[in-house]
Length: 514
Image (cartoon, rainbow, N blue to C red):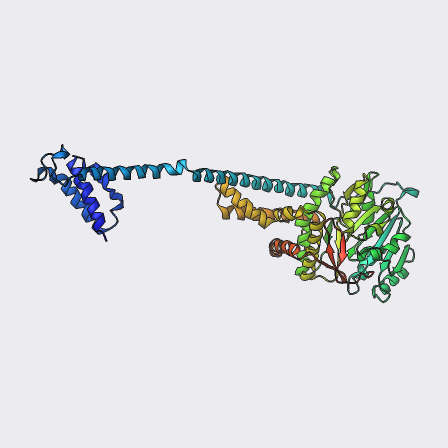
């Protein structure tokens, strides 16, 4: 198998010796770098060295003069063939050396490198901007939350009256319902009424409501049983009779599972300045036992609070960002009446978003109350909490489609993976080291924010925080993908399909008043 190789080498050696070439030239033409790969090649190399040095002193009838190749006794045409062969090989080597620098492959590689640098730069800029959001949320939360205000006297008699609308739907088995409702009867505010709306006549919460009404006869409270079908939203259908009976200039919609502190309503009214149309509370939770309760507190005190506070600051600065939640929302009733009342929003499942949108479009501002909305549901399960997050994600995608791209990028793990790659491209950083640094710093920032929202240390250990925080950060991407894959929303006793823009329509279900 080596016979052709050896013949070629012998021909090249003969030509070089006959032309008086040096040992170095001989080695160059023989391409010895390709020959020194085995024992046979090594032996051949030794033989060639010997021949190169001994040939001038050995008598040979075939070589008369080494300086004149025409005196070499050999077959005719041999030198011309060797010259042509060596010349072709040298030309091929030159072409191979020039191709990478002159071909289109190098230009394509350069374009790819430019795109990588541009993409990596954009990712790191977004990453740095999000750390600014972290900082803003921490500073604004520290200065804003738990800083109580005294109300101004802008209404009749010096105090703005408030109609508190309580939709008691879907809560018949909540063991904390009675305690939560009682906190509304004991609010320290001089002018308010309670409008308690129950859907079904046989609901066991009716007995709790009547017991509280008898216990606090001085409180202006009314019970509305049944509802009116004005749209597909079961909450709107339930509240509409109570809304029609409201008699004060301010309307507070407050969910059934909320715990109300005595001075919370006072604080909310204090934020209702003449240019403000909505005052809403940032969702949070009370101190409850069990890991599901810890998971909820970590979510509402970290990732949710971060964006809520940041967007709330943009609202306060006049950027017109809508981040209102209907869990606890104080509004000017006359502005809603201009739209036709809450029944005008009956075809939207996210009625709170469209309440705020309508009020903003009429030039009113939005503010966050200094006290969070204390969620205190008696039943707390991980599965129910994840379904709730998935439903909210589906609503955001339908109402604000650009969240399809922005929401995943705002999560710790996704942004950490991308920014770590960008750091390796631009900064030559170690991928794993950068990712661990990013994750650790993010968790520390969330721990600081959680303590601010809680107004003190949370009622669980740092280890429980880390476990809950990791679970939340890892699961959020799966919840987002599930929301994209299955856009149908199951809420209360119905299933709904969302249209782009937020309108909803029932799917394979009869629309009942809920």
